[in-house]
Length: 188
Image 1 (tube, rainbow, N blue to C red):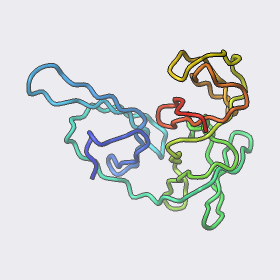
Image 2 (image 1 turned 180 degrees about the vertical axis):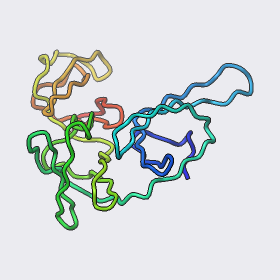
Image 3 (image 1 turned 45 degrees about the vertical axis):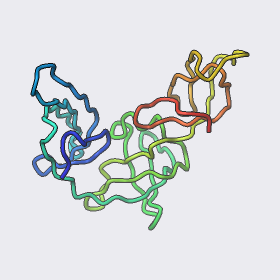
């Protein structure tokens, strides 16, 4: 059982017997005394793709969903479908661009550390590793004397995703990106 205050983006829980993934969590602390923190959470139904917005108290409980978690590797893109391979039995799973949503920004061929969420051998979604290493394909030239704590600039990565990076980074460098926040962490 998971409390609403413990929910994080990407977690899978059951609502009315249907698995839902947590897409967004906003905590709001009321200013009046004795009021409890409210959590505004956006869920996505894993079977229909429908969105569900809920306002919850921190001590509301949810049942963890009965999913099988299989380690997979991203293999390749086939039209609008992204193909993943199970690392144990080499079974292939396919997810569409719409089902993956923002996760496609972090997928590169051969990426490991991905967990596929399965019910009855049907893939409902994936969980990405906490960070991925991506190469910079386009950014403004490095500025001599730029410091690590200085200003940032936009960099386009190999997946087409754009992220803010420190000014001293150059094209063709590898960087580590946090998959939860979509922000630059460090050089790889």
